[in-house]
Image (cartoon, rainbow, N blue to C red):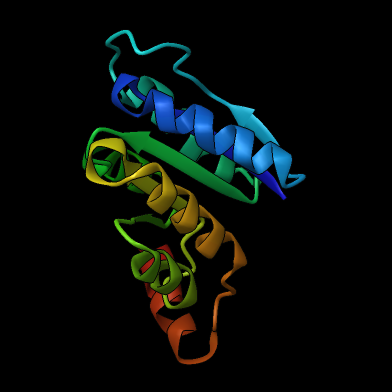
Length: 143
C-alpha cells in the first residue's frame, strides 16, 4: 500500500516509529516531514499529506501531533479526505469500517507506542463495510 505520513514536532518521534514499522511491513511510505522535534507550524506538514491522498497519489495517510486534534481538523478541510482522530484500536476500526477513513490522526502525547502501532495495524487491516454506511459517505463527500 502507498501511504503518506506527516507530523509536527510533537508527533515526530511516533512518525518515525510508524514509518519504520510500515516500511518493515512492505508498504511504500512518503514522509512529508517534519524532520526533527524542533517547533514547527503543523498545517505546513499535514495539509500536503491530505492533499496527496485526495489527489489519489496515496491510498492512505497518517498525520500526527501532540493530541492529533489540530491535525485532524487540517486534514478534514481537504475535500475527499475523511480523517478519523483515533485514540484506540476500536476508534481506528470503526473509522475504517463505518466511515471509510482514508487518513487517521494520532496524538503522541495521548497513547503509548504500542497503542499507536496497534491503531495503525488495525486501520490498515479493516475494510470499509459499504452497504448502509455508503450513503453517509456519499453525503459527506457531497459537502
